Image (cartoon, rainbow, N blue to C red; front, top):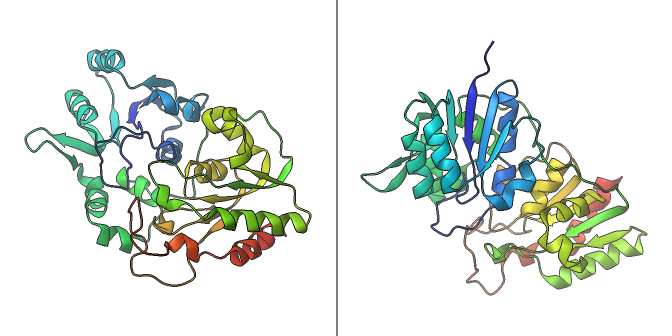
Length: 318
């Protein structure tokens, strides 16, 4: 029987569960957390379009038959081909939306479409609730579904615990007890946990005899090369991380993980019974705020105590 042809468009330019911003910064974590959807199409022929920088996350994935970089040449090739049974467009980007619209022969479409009259991203039927949620922070705050549940619902399916699928196969073995993944990207500096907290946490864990490795102490190869970064995370048995790409990678590698959350919604994460989210001690009406910077004297991330993170990690390692 001929395989169905599926096109997944996910470059990371716009996050599925966030408002679209015109900046063309790749959200690697958002690319990776879409991969559970591939379980639904493991018997089909899948083409995935992504940004060149995100290729290492997907290259080698057994459920992707053709991995393409988003560029004009590949877009024109697919427009000439135009024979997909299903399109899943998870980008709200203008150019990608128009490209998706031009693939006219596909009748089964999920995710987002582009309205050329209003010059804005719109939703196909099953994605309407998702688009409404990301357009209004009040609805996003009230959301209790994980990203996996929302993504599967977007294509009319129920999520049954399907995991991330990382394409790159790490070349390292576990040699560290705990990795401290502490660096926030330029896109979300507010996610940072204070440096003194990381230092104090390291001291407490070292005192207990744990072998610790820190992201900030790695060389340029790990900090700037995605494959090397994955190798570093894979060398750790346990990971403590802010909400970042490293958190997604650690979950994909089935590590024990503690995620530190404040300005971003922890309920969208699922740890597959291998960890948990740690939140600020005191309830604050502004959490999650979804802002890049904090206007308060003390950011909510400062309200996550070293003692609590230490205690939770001890539980996780027992």
